[in-house]
Image (cartoon, rainbow, N blue to C red; front, side, top):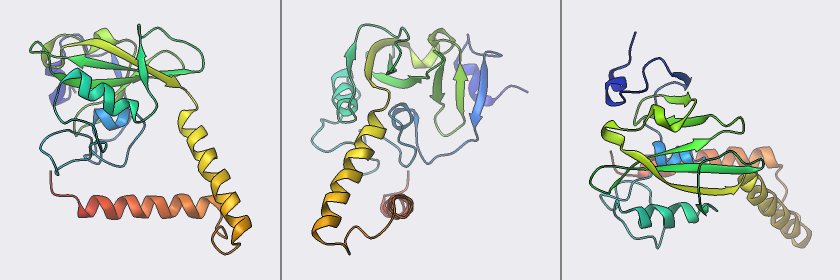
Length: 193
């Protein structure tokens, strides 16, 4: 049975696989950078997460700056490159950013469809046209970027533990549990969407 959102993508029906159930915890912009804890949107201010010191608006340059805070840099295309994670930014007919998708290690693309499912699709053409526009900008980062940042945090934590053993007494799993709880508490404090 077709999903209600499929009508927005003329080339998509039958060319996607659901990879997670519907959720409003995050959107396509957050999903593209690997953040499944919050909804990223520049407007209205104070309603959703937006990286600090990044201008708010749906202009491409604002989204590029936002994604740069997560280690991405502009690149030429969406061709698969081993060890590199890429995102595609979709621009609508009016020049505004509408969507972002991320490339998986197998070359397929994954997208979060608003408050609906995360989906896997073979190529970007499946979402092109229609309301989302077309992929007009590509960005990349090392595929292990998040893991590298995590390792840096762990190393800093280990250095702190040498100075004061009580500070670094928890194990990595407990720190991850704490961060999940802290993020959940922060979401509860954010205004309703």
